[in-house]
Length: 576
Ligand SMILES: Cc1cc2nc3c(=O)[nH]c(=O)nc-3n(C[C@H](O)[C@H](O)[C@H](O)COP(=O)(O)O)c2cc1C
Ligand code: SF4
Image (cartoon, rainbow, N blue to C red; front, side):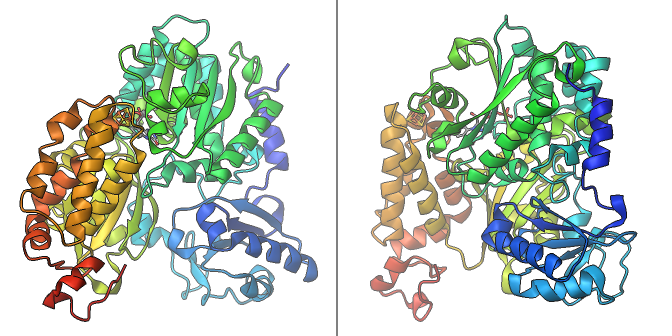
């Protein structure tokens, strides 16, 4: 018989490495992909060596990304009875002095500190809770990111993980779980913002016995990294949400679908699944209940369109990832022809807290129609690139200026490119009056999408960025239907020649005139493919016209324009 939740919790508290327990210093290293790219593995190895060399008895374990990607590699040190201190941009060379001074010595090394997580032990070390990039956050899906050991399920349990599943399995009927999700007004985070509870109700109403829960972690859009971050930093929150969805809809198996090149999310999700089986959280009679559920990781090839829900099912079934016509919808005919529900990684990640704290609690956060939080990935011309969980309704100016710190070198923001390659441009002038909100952003022509915001400063060229987006959309068209196969390439040809200084007077009208044909495409890849050019032209018409009529790139980014003798570009160089 699998262990009960209480037995698991007792074991977890006895064995896990929760900071503060056990009276030893706890050292953690940010080992999400951002940390690993910045050298976290080398830092971790150096810490192992140095602790041994200096004879220090401390707990050392990896964590994922807390969101401050700009400060990686982050090393956190929590001395017994003291607040945790984060040290920024740590290299292996810094490790000996860090261990000597900050782990055991009297010098807390304020020179290396990012800040302390609470009242600061030293006036020279600021309190991170007061940082603008932290103060605005409401951490629900990311509550454990950067804190929990993503490779140790017992650490998750010790911090309250799987309590919501236990509550659902023993104190709630499946329909009550759906009711809470409906009450929460949770909307899908994969792009279309469809109400999640309603979707679950469709699947609950479909006949069994075999039904699937699919978790979409394809995330092939370069500006979004929140799904990867959740899977790398706290895979058990995702898994708990999936199992809860399975219980609510009486499904039998879950697949976490991850792009094959995202090796760290794959590794961590697989490890969480394996440990969940070992602990009796997956498989037969979960935690001693009558509910049984299986889960596995499925991989795609490298194709953006395989994130489209029906293409994803084709990929899991071993065929080319091309969308299927709908209807029938997945809740009726999904994976292997069986009823299925598909949600994004982030969507599932909210569910444990919704079940634990109630749908009404979740709905009390956010704006009128966009409830809860959005996981915003800030990149581009921004001082503090990173991942921030922010309540909907927060003005975009606060997101960019306060949280992200604005553009580097005091430059002005020119635009936000939001919603991924099928999203749009939002000019700085609209940032003032537009909140972070699904509907308010849709009304501008841009969209919140899955949370990627690429910031363009006054130095960025709208034509250049649009060309990159249209090239991506053309390359990624799966080719199954002709409006998209031909239309996305036609748009890209036009944007490329405009960027090369060879634009024709009617080019933008021709490109925009493709919208009705593209609207007839089989999936949203074609249907939304005119968004980037439509919003670029709507807000930056003069800049585009300067490229076409004057053969001039006002921002000085389009390299080809220099050969057309633009005076404005003299000496500007290609800053790309
Ligand atoms: C071209 C294309 C790519 C997509 N890629 C993703 C993706 O990577 N992740 C995702 O969750 N949804 C993606 N979607 C949306 C999915 O089709 C689907 O709406 C989503 O997974 C549903 O989850 P949600 O209700 O939680 O938002 C994509 C859609 C299209 C048209
Ligand atoms: S719209 Fe594009 S991506 Fe979607 S099925 Fe048609 S060709 Fe493929």
